[in-house]
Length: 586
Image (tube, rainbow, N blue to C red):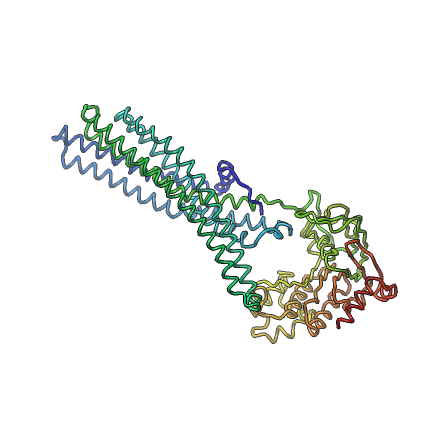
């Protein structure tokens, strides 16, 4: 996975469009934020007026005057409460909606990424990025504009009001602000890097936990529970060390800000006291001044406290963008069209292929023609490229050079959906989704009726055992189908393809992991599935492909032998060697 680093400016720029659908809420939220600041900014002026009147115009300080000031403050406080309620409610909902939009976009982008991306990326890391990392974006999306908007209003108003009270004192206080801001920004950069390391490590932890729990049977079979605990503890301790580093940076950051707070108050006490002695400021003005400085410091402190949340939010956005910026390597060409139902001719012309990540070359100048309706089998040693050849047809990978055609048309001229819709794949490693038997078969054609599902299951030889399950078609199969045997899972996957009813079939070692009884049942289903379709079968058990129309022997050198079972046995080459070796093993 690409761990590209982004500048803060770029992160904000890429994030801003997500506010587009929520402009109304954002404007109202900021208006409410300005109302909440009004109460805080008016209070020092009320206290200043009462204090100065009490010291210099005691006769004017009546109960009626105090009552009017109290009523004004009460009205402002009621406005503050209503505005704050809207911010706490709708503001947070807006943040949650933005988080939801981002998660949808990330998940949609992940669906378009190629096998190469998933071959090099841990699922735990991906899950962390579209779940935990985006939780922090909710608070960031809501509070970031709100907090900075409030801080801006308070700083500007406080400066104007304080300047009218005493310009020299105001300049002295505000000279500290840029120094404080510069120091905080520098310290924050360290915080962000530490938060990013935290996110990466929690992703590694998630991946390790997932790997261990999914392989629990292997762990128990080899009695390696203690080893797994030790491996986990290494990662867990590393996460603790990173958190210690983060908290050390945070402590430095908070200590620095408290020191600047104290410096501001020190300036007010020292300079304000001197100006009071020289009668350059009144007592009421000094009280109001102190309250405004307190408000300013509280605002700065709030921004500083928000800095942790801000950095978490930026880290979440950064890790989100690392997904969104991952290249979509397999995509529809601009002139791609929907594929009509094919006759099933597949043609490889001078095809070369190497894996994009490690540039491991598999084919060079491969030529092959599969006729419509032909049952083609491919055998050969491991690493010869059998599965890779089949993965090129539905464009799980794109050829490096050359062309693959279906019915004479380059497959890159078809849309991916229409191309893959016409190809059925049954693999050795069956994947069933967590859900019911019915839901897993329906995956082949979500719009199909229950009757069609049952018919597909009968054709796959799965109906009988499904009806013997506790809840029939509504039986929960468990995560990855763990509640079913290998043969049962394979027949459900075949039923799924029967329901899809594609003109082209790819059978990738579909029976190699099964026992003899299951292999016989599944092989029968596969023969029926292949009838009337172009089918390509990869097999290690050569007895299952004896009746194929044509058999290819594929090695690292390319296609080295070709013919029917009888023809290949007669020439006593590599196929004969494989077949006789299999007989000896039996």
